Length: 150
Image 1 (tube, rainbow, N blue to C red):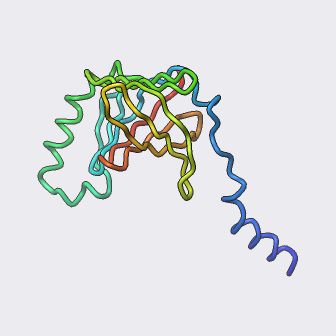
Image 2 (image 1 turned 60 degrees about the vertical axis):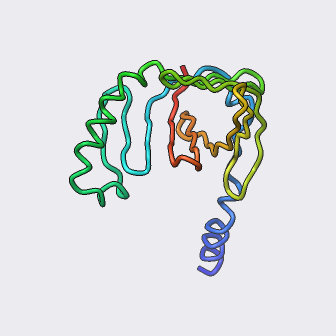
């Protein structure tokens, strides 16, 4: 019984260390936007249906307008995609194109894409690949974009 207990405790503490990091090779290709999320709401791009997140519930009556605004924005996001070739990153979201070289680094429990865009801006984007989807989180704006490989 003690051996089983020690095995379980060991797995609980060391399992996070065994999680695989995404490689540059896994990021390659064209990715289509499937979900867009802010701190207060999430939008399924294909169905154009927005839902309120837990933190958004505190907005009360503003929820209805927030959801309508997001659902109205869904049509513009239908063409959004991300393309990664080598260490070059190109994101197209509505009428905003961000392109440029990037590097991958580790920060605490996350992987980070550090990109320098052609327009002179830069961004640190936290990311994971989960269930064959690429999830990008922009901490500066609290926005999350989930992409599926095309």
